Image (tube, rainbow, N blue to C red; front, top):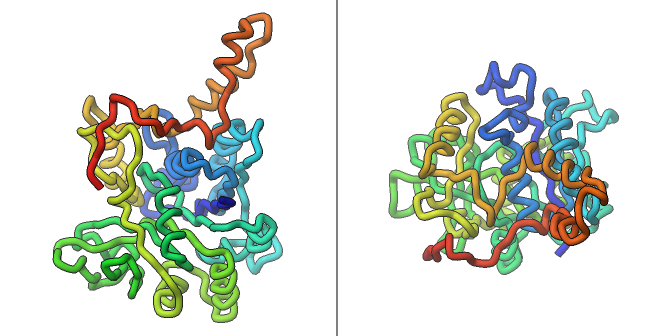
Length: 338
């Protein structure tokens, strides 16, 4: 399965000022040496997706440096890669006009890969996700677009893209940050919100982007997805159905947080603290990688043959990033009903 992932990391993050005065939102520190972008990248590589492009724009220097130092070394010995892409200089103003325009600018790059699926994921959320399960859902339904979705309180729904879906997941309506969001059928207190993670059939994506270009549409949530729900096969993947190995009993099921405000970021950081955190940063079955892991990798590679016996050197041989997550069941994990 040839999957190419584009990570949208170009947002300014104005609601996180002054933290974003010098850094893009995805490059902001989270906790224990991790940055916000590390979560989506860890989910992708743990899901064995090895062709990743990070689309950066606003104050990209620290983000580009982090990708080069903390992530690129994991791909040095393998067939995959991770690269940061800035807006192309030959575009009007040399900027991304929106999420869809960012992908359109690199449509030729996608075509060169001839992918089976294109994953377009947001870079600024805290969560664990096995993307392969979403891919299986997408393929089983022969979808043009699949949107990962999560249930949120109705009073907070106006901050998200809200989906209205049938029982089989077929999306009938997509509203971007509506003032009066539609509730989940049977539960007026909840709404079904987009997580900003999309899977596309490549041919459908190319056609939608070309048509959007003619209309002057530039954003997935505001422009493309509402129209696609009327014209194409669009499905919602329920994030609550995603099962990640190694999650402990005391953790919150299907933990996902949008950390777009100072208070939301502080709350998520608090969730990762304590002996029984709602979101456990330490999970050897689905590791989150960051700067510390890259430093350890560099140290391992720096050992000379004289310092390390042959049998130890073989045991310490670093594994390719997308092959490192163990998915065999261990006794520290219980089965959870789906």
